[in-house]
Amino acid sequence: MSVKTAYEAIEKYRNELNDLSLAIWKNPEGPYVEHFACEKTAELLKKHGFNVEVGAGGVKAAVKATWGSGKPVLGFLGEYDALPGMSQEVATEMKPIEGQVYGHACGHNLLGVAHVGAVIGLKAEMEERKLPGTIIYYGCPAEEVLTGKGFMARGGAFEGLDASIAHHPMTTNMVTTGNSLALNSVKFHFKGVTAHAGGDPHNGRSALDAVEITNVGCNYLREHVTTDVRMHYVITSGGTAPNIVPDYACVWYYVRAPRREIVEEVYARLVKVAEGAAHMTETKLEVEFMGGCYETMNNLTLVDLIHQNLQEAPQDKWTDEEIAFAKKLNDTTPHLKEKAVSFMGLSMDAELHTGVGAIGSIGNSGSTDVGDVHHMAPGVFFTTACYNIGAPGHSWQNTSCSGHSIGEKGMIYGAKAMAKWGLDLIEKPEILKEAWKEFEESMGGKKYKCPIPEGLPVPHQDK
Image (cartoon, rainbow, N blue to C red):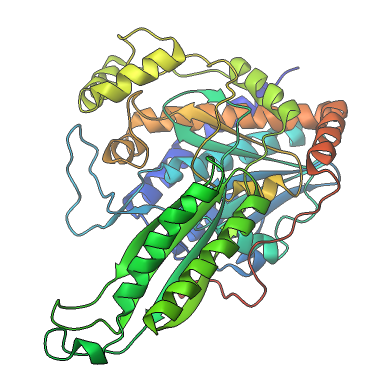
């Protein structure tokens, strides 16, 4: 079936889309304070006739932009937060931008705008052909801390969806049947008693000792969990000087597992470890639960559909300049390029991915809050090539490509594939029916339970 109008609309507004992506790239923002990205995204969607709500689900930097009426209701999950320590110019060597801390090392400037392009294109197609259905663009903050969509879900932002799609910039064009991990995030704050570490240490109660004992206990706990569980931590505060017994210390943990239920079980055991450390050191423990997310649950029916859509959507050819730029970046991580070409079955001459990779079964040992939406309605997650083929995750190489025409081309390709995906679900209701049958079987009668407690406030979102 034709999708000519959608593709033409994306090309017609390509400069607007790229301008928005570059504006967000030049103004990177951290979690829950993506007010520039939120405002500029909302402005463009209003211009194109969407009914735009800013502050969706009670999250100030969230956008919910709706167009159309009736069924199906399709959600397009955009994001736009950046990463700390990842400032970088568009260059082939590490070159941080002076005075700038954050950078788009996960390409969320491209990610957010790809979904904007998709809904603009799909809207044009639906208008011309008078098709029923409701399309919703979601601008979701704070994906990098894995709780943005959870807070939005708690506020009801995703209620009523029939299906959702999430695109992500990556080194390859592909979709997998594998899933990322569920997660809990927690900080253990210990409060003790200060004392002179040399003169009267017996009068002190070291909060740092409690942190270290917690970490030792965690490392023993690893022996008694399944091998697919991940626990990792960083000490965020450990004292001020060696000759002062620290009266405050803090350790920040992530607990990950393939299923939400396992995360909750292991998390409860880890809290007991921290409680034991507090008891052993005679310190006081405050548990600050930061939130959590579900594992992704790629719907196989929708996997097949977006794989087909990727094969159908036109890809821009890489220019000689883009290939040369990518080669210089690949030369900074030759071992990763070698692994990438081996995994994809490509020639070592490849610098950027072209074509569509076979549907893979490899899961992601990382996490994303897209999983929360996947447990509310059928959903799918896929990638397009926006970086050089050997780019590490969360790297300066990614930041560089995200501000380059390489990233733009992958973004536009992703937008076209998603527009076709939405059109297929509107015109072929049997696909959505099959996706829901699979979803209900996967859920096994369970319902989504938001991992964000009612009393937990949305973090530092002042404007």
